[in-house]
Length: 287
Image (cartoon, rainbow, N blue to C red):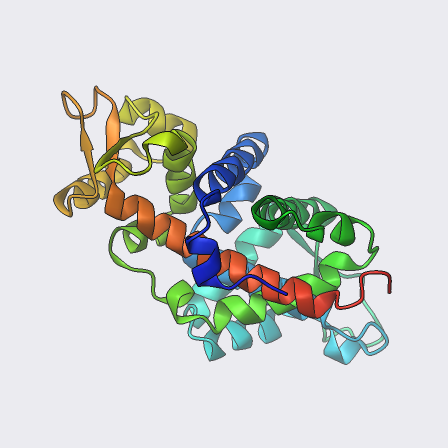
């Protein structure tokens, strides 16, 4: 039976398991920052999931039902994830950096289907594996080996995950500090980096030390403008969500217990969505 968000949020091992997940996300970002950045802001993350779901649900025998730019943009607008112009710019960027590609022309040259490139699918698979590993670590389950044992696992699982994310109010409307970063380019990476530097044994403190000391070094690793990152950090500081143990920007940054809980609760919601999708996609693991 799939774990629900409340069960996950209250699990005593959640902090350690999610920290390991954050470290895995950091490693993926370090290996391919540009491609990982597609999943590192709320809007781009949801647009990518919409496009992938359309790709996996297409009918390969009917070119008229392939994934096209027009179809992706329409679904993005239907779910109120982004404007037509933003969605169009996102797809053009994905084409420019070879994250998606045009399918060779068919008999109807007016239809130009799109598909994700192998490198993009590898990135999505890595993202899925990291979250399945977290879920297995929480309850000793076997989601990860089941996923790895199915040749069409990603095609079966990802569309259901996308449905869950798009229909979740907590995902679509994050709270307080979390929302400051979800709409920032690479904002997800910012939070993963903060969490990865937290000792789970310190998670109960009011002010939890992170591994961040220099804003400049932090911004450089994230490929972000130092000024832009500093502005977001200042906004979070004004909320009482982060601070400095000494001189601002030149000492260890702390995150508040409340901000830490926001992050963990958001992860619990996402993990529950993935777990429910996994249970639906693989009800009989041997099949």
